Image (tube, rainbow, N blue to C red):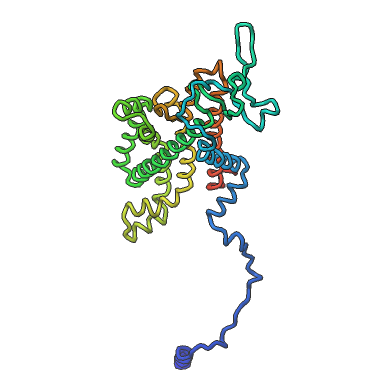
Length: 354
């Protein structure tokens, strides 16, 4: 019996399989795979979920429109943001295609001691071919040109500050959360001190050292707005640093910074993008506040905040001067918040179920 088993084993070990010994199994009908879902990447799925949210699409559309006007708006007429025409002060809005309907025809209502009177400076001065689409200010400058020039400045400041804050805050939070222990304790105490200093104090001290301007405001926002980003990055790191893929990388000899920026960072890009989109309207409002209190863009340059400050001084007599910058800034802040909310749900669809 033992000899027979040995013979069989030898025969099996010496046997060489041939093609006829195998039969292909066509089980495509048995395996029901959703080919559309299987071929769909993560980012494609994010885009589809984002565009299903109507409010986010509306916000994205408004951002694109305002950005386009911020680029081409100042060049759509012959005026510049700093040219003054003192003989054309406080002209009401006038648009050629709408004045025939009795609106935006350059007429404004002026309050007097006996009541109110309709005034049209275009007709009084014989300027029939002159059109200020948003009107002119107290120095005869075109408000249309200044609003879109100010929107351009505000967008540049907000986006630049948000991106710089993302790099600083993200790196700070990831390093603090990964190393933990005393390193994390020291870094978090420094963060609390930096967060406790009022923003207005930092900006005022910077203005004593640096010249007022766009770079000074960006630098001030860079020093104060990175705290929120660092806290989100640290929380995500604490959640992911003990996961299996991190332990596997550490076992294979990967360095700390390789794990932080190559392994963990790609897995938290969703919350980072969402926080950046939420920080942009905050930066826009902060810049507008600083310009409103006189700590922003120096004249003759302008931003949305400085335009609101100038229009506020003549709000009771010429209210049309403050309306355009307020509307543009409100739409910008609302649009970025809508887009950020849409991205948050698209990048983390579980939020919609909560």
